[in-house]
Amino acid sequence: MKYVILRCEDEARGNGQTATLLEGAKLSYLQHLAQAGAAGVIRPAVSRGRSRRGVPALDRLRLHRALFGLAHHDPEAAPGLCYAASVNLHVAPEEAVWCCDLVTRQDGAVVDPVAGHIPTKESQILIQALDDQLGSERHRWEVGQGSHHIFITNDPALAPEADGSMAVCSPELLIGQSWSRRLPRGGTGQTLQRLLEEASSVLEGHAVNRVRVDLGENPANMLWLWGAARPETPQRTFRDRTGLSGAAISNSFFMRGFAQCQGLDWSKGPTALEEGPLRRLMEKVEGLIDRHDLVDVHLVIDTQDPVERLCAMERIDQLLLKPLAEALTRRLSPWRLLVVIDDRRLSDTVPFIGMGAELPRQPVASLNAQHLAESPLTFPDGTALFAWFTQQ
Image: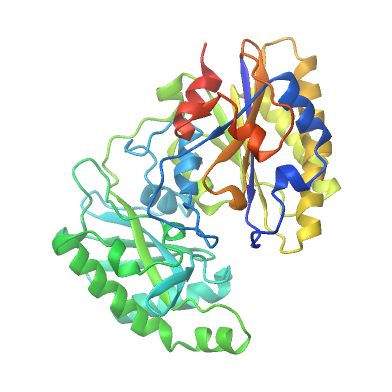
């Protein structure tokens, strides 16, 4: 059996009047799949995080892991380990590695979890300043990419729990909230708060942030530490867990490290969702399907132009999804295809469409959000969807 997962993630900002990708774009082929196969939604449990529109926020890195069959509590490919693996960073057994994300804080609340998409050439200057002023034998900072970096410590107060986890949420679940209320209780929370406040004092007045404010860009005036892990935590690869070989195509900093942790063949995705890059991507996907049992393609629509946002989704529909399904149909081996639309305007649900060998039909009349929500094919998380998709 060959499995292909295509995940389209909508990064574009917008208001409540902006159409969702599924309802605003003309998606004739995806509509065909929804009527010929099965469609439904992932409806995660409500988190305490809120999106900019006030609806429950979705932990997207958790969804990344879940679509490879990992539950939230599974120690494999913990976020901190993925961040470190993405830059091939060695972490000693006695150390803990944390995700360190630069964010924008205003009036005690996080308002931008990626600090205006700060470029690496600027963020590395800030990370170096943090390491120069706050680094010690116990703490050090390492440069990652964009707003995503790594914090390493041997401080016992910042060690993960015995199961390899630490209950600190990702920054996208902090939007509009008081960050101090999302820290763990006890000594760990106190140590984190002290460290975050010291870091903010370094970042607030840094020349890089002064220039960003002058240019009308969100400053990286705070860091957020989360996703702690230890390198000696037992790790099973994707093949160990599922018996399948796998490949991932993505530009995500997290996904590059995730692929390395899980023993996946990783390829960089297209930087632009135009005709040429999408056709080349299709050729790459076909080659990976020949060599692997499961191929995951993660695309991000990040344009701020509301028209181009929908056009990009339409090009994905016609230049990638349609030829991909046709290529799978021509194969002699059985196959399954899953399309997951991760739209920020539907942050309390994640629609999906699936079809292929032995998957039960559950068609919907249209890609309308209400029709999808009424489908009996509803899963509480991405892990349950992965189990349904790969069931034998």
